[in-house]
Amino acid sequence: CGDVHITIFEVRRGLDIHLYASCEVILGSIIYAPMPFTTNTTTTPSVPVRFPYLREVNGYMLLGYSLVHSFSSMFPRLSIIHGRELYHGYALIVMENLQLDELGLTSLINIRRGNVIIARNAQLCYANSIRWKDIIEDPKAQVILRQNRDDCAFCPTCPSACWSPTQCQQQCSAHCKGNCLTETVCCPDQCVGGCYYQNITASTDLICHACRNMRIYATGKCVQKCPSHMLKVIDSLCVTHQECTSFFMSSGFILDETNECVSTCPTGFDVILGSHCERCISGPENNYCQGACGEQHIRSISEFSALKYCSRVHTLNIYNIAAVESTETNLIEVFTAFESLEQIDHEFTIHNVNIFSTLSIFSKLKRIGITTNATMTIEENDFLTELWPLSHPPPIIQGSLNIVRNARLCLKRIEDFINYTNTRETDLQITPNTKNEYANGYLASCESNQLTLSVDRIRSLTAKILVTVPKELFFRPNGKNDYLRRPFLSVYYKTTQTRNETHFDATQSHKWLRIVEKINYNPSPHGSSFTMNVDLVSLLGATWYAVYASITSNVNTVGLYSTIGYFRTLPRQPEPILNLRGESLSRSSIELMWQPPSKPNGDIALYLIYYAPVEDRLPIDNPKLLCLMKDRGRS
Image (tube, rainbow, N blue to C red; front, side, top):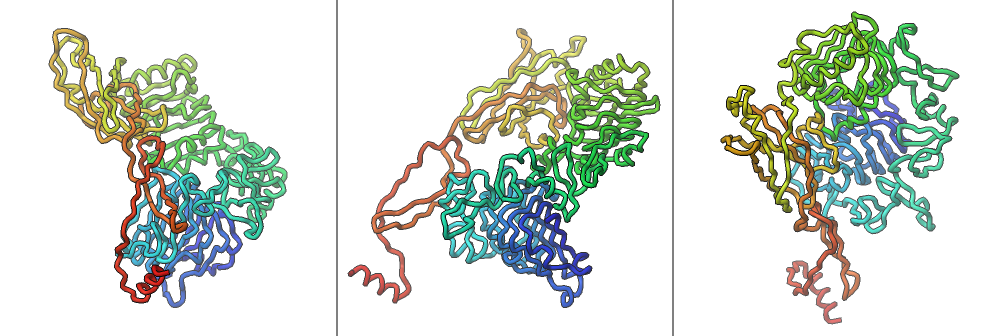
């Protein structure tokens, strides 16, 4: 099934409540928000829609504005939310359900991407008693629980976590990595969201509820990628050419260029032979693919996809896009929409876009402007540090060029770009402010020299950062002391899993932690530099960190900076294990089970178990139970 929208509008139009009864996979997202309390509730009850066979949702789920008491009967088998499409960064949203007593999503095992928010459900219990980190795959994802009912008993019949007073949350052994049939039976590696036996009475292979990569539509088999003779459907299913044409409500189309099956031919493609999509060659002669690749005015990240298959556009204007959380949007995937763009005929503007640090993302762009009336404007982009690197040939530009108020774009970068393009297009018109040294780069230090940074005394919780500061930074060209220009040293650091961090990545800049030290400079008679020390404390054990230093004249600017260094802290004592519990196997043996600590602070080599007999002195209030125990003791 495709997207599911159940709102008050569908209800009023007469929703067929049996429409989704056979859905096993939702290829899009689910929005369930009937809002019965906005009308006469005696005539518009909460819609009893059920998805009895639904196992997986490709996008997100929004469940809100309803009068249901539990979602257990609506989604009895839902095991996984992929989060390939998110709602403002969220994969699961449960809000404003006035009579909701419990979530009831008892089969939910995995949320692969995105955050969770459960808020303003006045009667909801047990949202806090779910171990969300066992469900959410992304360690950076957030769970927001707010304004629900909090005065509920904590799992009265369960050892650790529960969905309701009688329904425990499924626990998996550590080696199953959250993917199991039972606590001790792991699912195959290619599964996500659990698995099941097709025939419980016979010894059969385990069947995945959902696949980690791709699933053969006809057989249900999980594969790493689709076979060459099959087509991909939304990075989830593999279908044959014949299956594709009847897949999306009997109207599927074959996108030969990417070997995909799509519901409609995308922007920049024409339908040929009834069911095939052929790329349209964009240009003035066909009105830029019948207007699809004409004037593009983009004001949000989601609108980038309109450019995905356009090789030539009339106008491209990108406005007012703020920095985003990396968990909300994978910008590397988003920027692939620019890979086809080769020419912009008349106008190219990037204004106040804080997700670009370079224009090299327009990797195939060869020309901007085909007449002297064309314009290219780059202005007020706070995180832009370069246009096109010299290693990547920039496009030919014709017309006028205006580059102003880009806080971290140095004049040298602009001049290199102009010099390169002038050798190929001599009538380029450059506005005066473009070459004004005060019009750009005012939050950056554009000198050629850099700070030298090293890391010393690395421990499990602390490290010392040494920064070598050139004395020449504190003198004007005439030799006078100018230390008041740069009185602050800032050290930025954060945990990392890669070695390719950047200083001004707009999606990550808020993730850097910062320590600021005031520089008290006293010129020494000898040497060309002096060293400052900054201590990093409260670090995590056995963890990689990225670190760099910057000297600025104001704590709110980014000035001269060092290269980024990397170091790993030493291991330390791990956090306590989780969910320790035991089960008696016989009179003389007990099986212990637990989960690893949330912060191991290093590689765990072994677990030490200490035990000792204790006298049972638990009070027994039930006389019948007391007599029964005495009888067992005598026997």
